[in-house]
Image 1 (cartoon, rainbow, N blue to C red):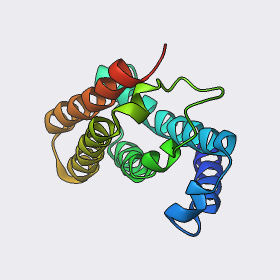
Image 2: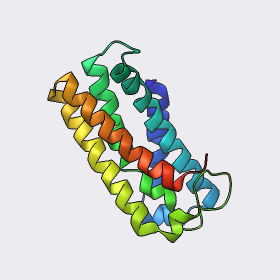
Image 3: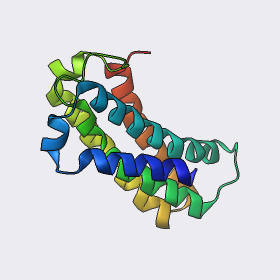
Image 4: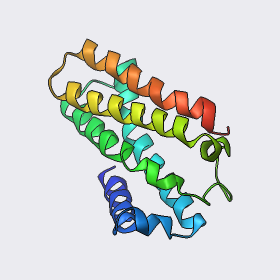
Length: 151
């Protein structure tokens, strides 16, 4: 698990060097790959937390907190994967993202905020508080998926 996270983080770091100008000049297919890698790393970290919350896997406070911190970090990287021109190609992103960018960014900001709350409560909260915030974070992800992601 750590190898995938590390590989994804390194890839994202390389792609984001130079700030927003670097990704704005990237080829659309590279931006799509960046976006997909960021979501893959998020999912990799989100899945074990979901299993713990559902009771499918024993709760491990340290692992949960680490996964939550990774999700928080990755959530902040996602918006860079939606540069102009990256709406075409092998992607599940709906074209409405680019025509409704203000709404999309608002939803991304909400997800970033919920992920930050999850990372914070994972460190010090009770399991019930963690479960509640996990649900809020998952809901903010789903809100974007429902509106802006093709099945």
